[in-house]
Every structure is written in structure tokens, then in C-alpha cells.
Image 1: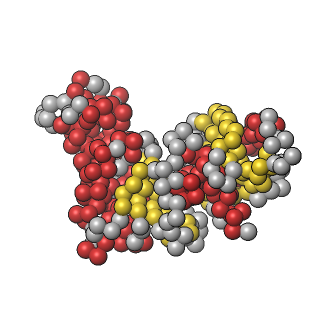
Image 2: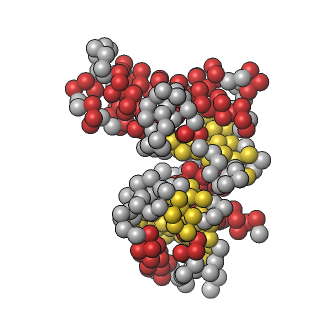
Image 3: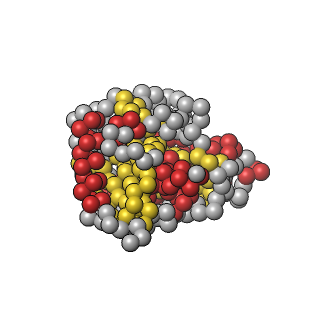
Length: 321
């Protein structure tokens, strides 16, 4: 019987970890999920991951041939195969590739979750055929993956591409990284909530959001209010797009991408975020770049995007060989 070659794609999150077996065309043939249990030791996590992934593989082992493993995780270093000081995880420093070598002798690669999303987009999504693009992940924070000349940019130490931690205002909002005014404190799901909280301090405009406790307002509430034509919610989206458009204009000057792709929960707001971001991006762009860069939604399926991104990382390595 001919077995189909697959890789194991793993997305390590602060709460949940998703994994699945993916073929080279991006078909997710089997998938699973488990609690990360981030306060427990990393060694325990990776042993549980191996056990759960093996259980899933065993159900289809006659049909599948596992040839590689790709992992996406916060603060992951591609060069060293490590996770270093990850937010929302109690692990300080983990040599992931070495740990996985206890059970696997096949190729293993690791990168951060935003870089994985960019590679997934390049192989399976909206960036197919592109050599120069930027992936922006708009979740609780803002992640980014930069592809130039067909290759993901890692920099000399493996940590390149932190657009979310470029500064919008040196005296601005406190960021989880310890500094002030980072882009992700303005352009993210948590950032737009902070914007609404600030806007609510003024007596106008009227808004359905004023009926809620400001600390309980989520980006979904803001989106729903915007759908109702709520002026305050629409102003919040406009301000978010202004900050994001400003920094994307700077990023375009660095790498001159063909497109910028928005991915993640806040990107699901559609025109409410895309229209102001595009407007301000064009306004702030250097003239030679105006009207050249497309702003696109992700082409990855929502539920499986993170697994496909991690799988794309190792598929790209294998296809090079």
C-alpha cells in the first residue's frame, strides 16, 4: 500500500495546543487538541504532546508516512530550536528540538507563531506565488512575519520581524514587553479595547458600549457595535487603522512587499479594519510606494490556520532538500 507523506504541524498556545498531520498540498488529514497546562514543566508538556500525537497517528498509520515535524510557538528561535522567555508560559528556556529528539529522528523545525502563519500563507494561502510580502497577525497582541526574496527574514539572531514592538508613541501605553507605545498596544484585539476605554472617558458620542463595564468590553462587542453604526466603535476602528497604517507604511519602506496580509481575530472585522488601515497606509506612504501594495485577508482556513502554518515551516525545509 502506498503511504502518503505527511508532516506533524504543532501550534503551541498559552491555553491550548493544536496539532495535525498535513500533506504537502495543505490537506489536514487528522487533527487533535490538548491543554497546554502552561504552569507545568516543559518536559511534561512535550511528553504529553508525543503521546497524544502518536495516538492520533496510530489511527491512520497504515495510510501515512511521517517525514517531519514543524512547531509554531511564542518567542521561538528558528536558528537555535528554542523557546525563550515565552509570554503566557512558565517555561524560561526550552531546547524544543533536542527535547523532541527523544522520540523522533526525522527533521524538526521551530519558529514563532507569526512566522509560521507567514509560511502557511506562502505555501497554502493568500501569498501563493509571492516572494515579497508581510503577514500581520492581529490577536491579543500583534505578530508579524516578513518574507523577502522568497525567504522568511530571521535576522542574525532569529528574532527579526517584530513589527508589533515598533514604537508608535514613546510616551504611550505600557506594553507587556516593559516599554511604552508599542504598536500592539494600539493595533490588536486588546489594543482596540484600550482605545474604547479611553474614548468612553469623554461624554460624547453616544454609544451602546456605554451601557457596559469598560473592563468587560471585548473586541467582539466593539465589532458588533460597529455593525450597528455605533459612532464610538467606528471611531475606535478608525484610530486602530490609523496606527496600523502608519507602521505598515514604515514597513513597506523597509522591504517593498507585494502585499500585506492581515490574519487573526481582529482581521475578521473585515472592512471595519481594512478600510481605515488602507486609507492611512496610503496617506503615510512615501510616494514611490503609493498604490503598489495590496492589503489582503488571509487565505488560510480559520480553524486550521495555525496547524497549517507550523506544517508549512517543515514542508518548506523538506522541499528545499
